[in-house]
Image 1: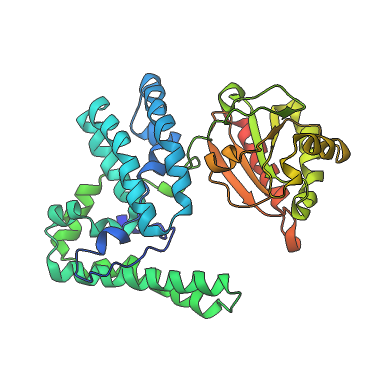
Image 2: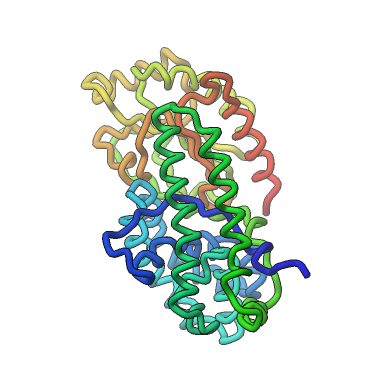
Length: 361
C-alpha cells in the first residue's frame, strides 16, 4: 500500500541550527519546517478548505499585516527566522480559529502535516496523538539531525566553491533514510493511526503561490518616467520589480532585458518598475539618476530610493535583483544577480513565468 508519508514528504527547505540543549525534545522544534504561512497563501489550499470569496478577502487583510515581516525574516539565521515565523503565524492561526468551521480547521491541520512530511512526527501534537514514546522520538530526531547536518555542510561547501558531489549523494541517502525510517520506528498500530489522523492525501508539491504579498512601495520624493505608483493599484498586472544602482556594472548587464520587457510586454499587461537604490554618493543625486536613465534609455517607471526605504521594505540584499509579482499582488519568484551570468538563463525563467501568470485569473 502506498505510504501516506511518501505522498506528504517534502525535502526540508532550509537547514536549521542546533541548540545547545541536546535533549530529545529541545531540538525537535527547530527541525520541524515552518510551511504554514506558505501553505495558507496558496489558492489550492483555499479551494481544499472550501473558503468562500469573503473569507479569502478577509484572510488577505491579515496577510497584509504580517507578510512584510515574514518576507524579511528570510534573511535571518534559521533559529532566529523560526522565532519570527512562529510569532508571525499567530494572527493567521487566530483568523482560522475565529472564522472557519471545526471541519475546515481539522483539514487545515491535516494539510499542515502533509506539508511537514515525516517531520510532522516531531511535533508535540503528533507525539500525543500517536503516543510516540521518548525512545521513538530520539530515533526520529536522529534521522532528522543527520539530514540537517548534511544540509549545513553542503551549504558551506557550495559557498566556499568546494566539491559537493559526495555531500549531495550522502544527503540524498539521508533524506531517503528519514523518509522510510519512520516505518522501523513506529509500531504498526501507530502507523495505522497516522493514516486516520492525516485523512485524504494532499500533495503540497502542487502549490504554486507560496510567497508573501509584495511589499507596498514606500513613498519617495522622486519618480522618473511615471507618477508615483503603488503595488495595490497595479492589481490585474504582472509586475517586474528590479533593484539597481546606475553605476553597478552587473546591473548594466540586465538593462537590455528590462528595456525589452517594458517594450514587448507592457501591452500584454506587464509593468516593469525599477527601484534605484544608491550604493555610491553619485547615485544619491536624483539628477544623476535621471541623467543615467536617459543615457541608458530606461523608459520604464523608476522609483528613486535615495533613503533605501524600499530596499529595506523588500528585504533586498544585492544589486541587481528582480522580483516577479503576480496579478493579485503576490511575489512568485525572484532572481539575484545578472540574468545571464555564466550561461544562466534567468531572463527565460522569468519570461516563461510571466506567460503563465498572464493566464491566471
